[in-house]
Image (cartoon, rainbow, N blue to C red; front, side, top):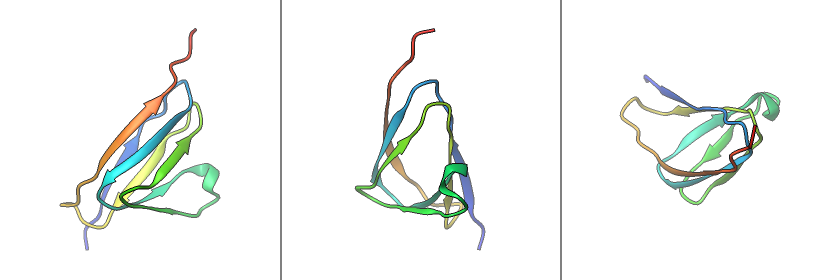
Length: 74
């Protein structure tokens, strides 16, 4: 089976991601090699300057998410 990957890019401030539809596995170096199963209703906190790697079961998979983040002043 062919998978598809997507990276939720790092931003300077902390953020949360709310999954509206779809499923994926999420990986991040702070998860110590474990994956999170994301599905409708999942909420994930992403620390400042961290990214999140998503892996989809199929290259035809889709996911809708909302991301809220705090923009930091430089």
